Length: 355
Image (cartoon, rainbow, N blue to C red; front, side):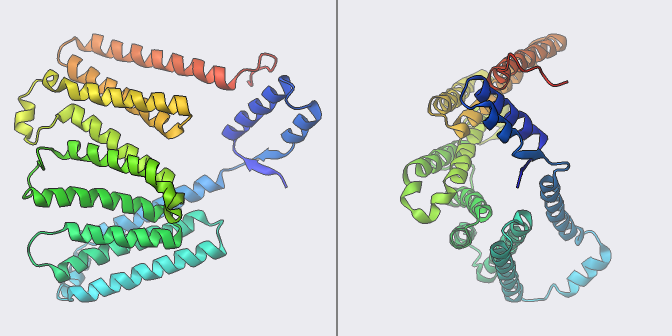
């Protein structure tokens, strides 16, 4: 049975086989066998399935939102307004259990139906979130302690992610963890924008550091969550680098009026810190062959540099010069990327390029 690949994968595989053959790592017979061991798919059905389920989930969300603009539906909802919150809470709990049940057993019986199974899991996650929201209404004491609900969702999602071996649920757990951190610190600062002298970007910078360190140092010590290490690492790095980028723009200000009245060079050091951290990630990724650190480091380094470019030059130079410099910078990046790509994938002096 031949391996089915797409056209992008075909080029990489052909380049690899040609490189091995040219450097006498494999003989001609082995190279020919490898070339005949795969075939290019005529149509990418996997991608169609992925996009179809994404669209289906989006349509479900749109259908839910449409309930609130249709007058007939609104009249029906108004008749259900008196339904006790506990009834809706129990209904959503049962609905989420049903979705998880279907997703889990469908995953066991048909593991190849990846997107169908994950769609059922996502619907279960949404139902769980609704259940927790109405549970909050049932037990609400008017003290604004919403962080307890997010903490509850973290516990539920963690247990479900481990029991169902679902990276999707684990991703939602990490998002809920970030929301819990934000609401918990906001609650203890009387819903102000600063907690212990830190605004939200600075707080989430520390949060991202803690999550990243936890992932790298402690994640392997628990077998139950070892399979989620890469996802936790990605989320931790994203929390950290996005927060640092926002910090480089807004500084540690909690008042937008004060920030708007401040010259950007007064918070230049945050931009320097963000750039240095991105460089450190890129260097570490290149040195240790860590793809996640390398890719995110380079991407956010470029984002930081272009953010500074807009901040300091947009109001200070002629627009024609501004866009000319912007075009030149992208051209240089493209040229350098082309050289790297050519050096990595097109080292085939004797193999003519495809037309």
